[in-house]
Image (cartoon, rainbow, N blue to C red; front, side, top):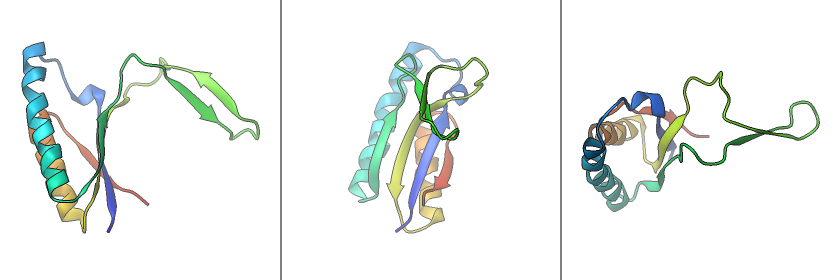
Length: 112
């Protein structure tokens, strides 16, 4: 079955109160549990905003590690879910449930 990446950029989240965010956690966790129960779950997690950030680049022929973040970056990954489902329609359904639970948009891409 194809695997799909469902994700959001942190900038899509918007400004909300701490109480609002706390209210979304149980909703999002319930969707993850639903995905697990359906046998489609591979991974789900959020990205630590202020954790260590670095990149690895070997395009010059030599491996170069660079510390980040980069000021020119306007968007960055906020969280992701990977599902193993039979088709685009099922991936769309899970993305919709995640978007409703979280309260912000999700993007979907099929993985190789």
